[in-house]
Length: 210
Image: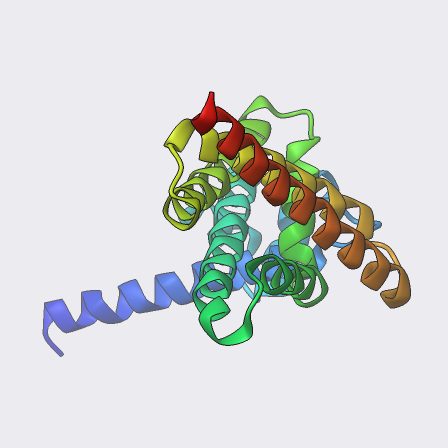
C-alpha cells in the first residue's frame, strides 16, 4: 500500500472519529443535561475512543462545543433555505418556514438546545458564536426580502431581524412543550410574522409616497 493511500485512509479514519465525537456530544444533550455538564470522558466513551485520543481531534471541550454551534446553525440555515425554495410549490413562505422550523426543533432537538444553551451561557466565545449564527440567518432572510418585496436592504434588514429574533425566542419557548401546545405557538407565530410583513408593506407604501 503506497504512502498517499495510507494517509488517505488515516484522514478518513480521523474524520470518522471526529464525526463520532460530535454525534456523541449531541446525543448527550437534553433538557436536564446541558453542555456545561458534559464530561470529556463520557463523550469519548460514547464515541468509542480512549479519552486521551479526544485531544487528537479537539483542543478541549469548548472547541467541540463551538463546532456543535456551527454545525447546528448551518443545518438549520440549510433547512430554512430549502423551505424558501419550496414555496413555489407549497404556497406561503411564512407557513412553510415555520413548519420547517418546528420540525427542526422536534427532529434535531439537541442541535437546537446547543444554540439555546450557548446563547445564554457564561462563555463570551459561545455567546458570540450564536450571535454570528443569528446574524447569518438575518442576512440570508434580508436578501430574500429584498428580492421578494423589491425594497432596499436596510428596510429588509429591519424586518428580517424582527422575524428571526421572534422565531428564535419562540423556539426557546416550545422546545419543552407538548405537541398540542407547539401547534398553538406555531399558529400564533405565523400570525405574528404576517403582521410584520403586512405592516412592512404599508410602511413601504407610506415611505414611497412621502
